[in-house]
Amino acid sequence: MSGQLTLDDLRALDERDPLASRRARFRLPADGVYLDGNSLGALPRRTPAAVADLVENQWGRDLISSWNGHDWIGMPQRLGGLIAPLIGARASEVIACDTTSTNLFKLICAAMTAQPGRPVVLSEPGNFPTNLYMAQGAVGLLGDRVLRTVPVDEIAGAIDESTALVMLTHVHYKSGRKLDMKAFTAAAHAKGALILWDLSHSAGAVPLWLDRNDVDLAVGCGYKYLNGGPGAPAFLFVADRLQERLHSPLPGWMGHDAPFAFEDEFRPSAGILRFLCGTPSVIGMAALESGLKEFDDVDLDALHAKATALGGLFIRLMDQRCDGFGFELASPRRGESRGSHVSYAHPEAYPICQALIARGVVGDFRAPDLLRMGFAPLYTSYADVWVAVETLHAVMHERAWDSDMFRTRARVT
Ligand SMILES: Cc1ncc(COP(=O)(O)O)c(C=O)c1O
Ligand SMILES: Nc1c(O)cccc1C(=O)C[C@H](N)C(=O)O
Image 1 (spheres, protein in one colour):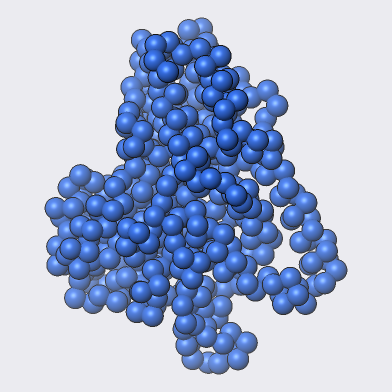
Image 2 (image 1 turned 135 degrees about the vertical axis):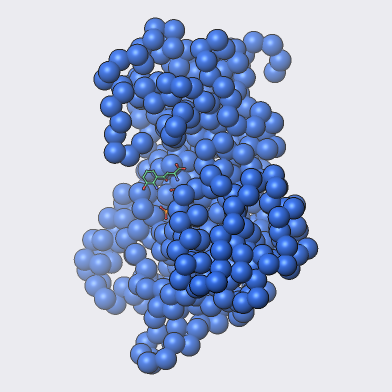
């Protein structure tokens, strides 16, 4: 499609979209457009019944026998098995557990203690804050270790024999820039370092081939594109080849080789289970399992192609309709270098975002000046992109954002 895009062009794309029928499986605003699935994924329609079944019929009726009878105890592994194909990993390498922050801490400590002669964790300034905070906490506790941050384009050159771990986020939460997983992983390995990827903004939208790229470690959120619900369990990946070498700094009983032997000494389980800590959050797991089932039979190539196309069309329509309003593209223009969200810098991004939300278009604001729109390929339609840009055009043209009502900052932005 060249030249000016029209609503009919986007409707035609929806008609041809092999994923179009998936949209009906989610609860979405009746008269609005939800473009924040990269922060909190939408509710799958079957999740309330799945959670109710667990609460009513499993917890409510079968009580404690459900740990075996409904395999609650196997949930971290079972859900790991559902996540594995989405990230190009083997089922034996993935578990659902804890939060992304906690999983980062576990894997940073595990990687550092396995390489005592290498004191450095290397990351980029402006990485998602929890990643940097968890590394700061880990190096502080371990002693004689440091977190070093260098701009992402200088990372490859900064890896040396002192580097134990390179910790990067695959798709940046602000810019949406997608890093070359294969190249960074190879650069870390060339100097004998391990690499830890945060896949929070990638899993469920962006192609991921952890095994093919020889990735060592990874984590990611369950509540974004995986649609697990607020505070859903996160996931953790450790390559099979490393599992026996690495040890969790939080060796809880669920990671023990025989939790129900109740021994005094910790003996790590074989395989990925050693990275579990405490009892799984079963109700949260049920919601995440239901969210993951929405990927059943999804053609991942089609999913990824749609994610790129939605963002690309958003950028084209912004060029077409919102030029001259002071927006600056803060994401890569090339689809291959972008994840599934697009950000624009604008000095009035906060009130603009609020004015958009008031008109039913939900994106988000990222301080200090970014308006961010996330495109969840399972349920965002091409026509949604049109509505979002037309609404933004109206908000800007009418200066609807220029009101005190939209300037008060909420606690969560
Ligand atoms: C890249 C990245 N890592 C981690 C997190 C969050 O971790 P947690 O679920 O522990 O709050 C987020 C979002 O909140 C994120 O965007
Ligand atoms: N995890 C969040 C939360 O508990 C409240 C509000 C937002 C979030 C997010 O996920 C933020 C998100 N990681 C981001 O990219 O900005």
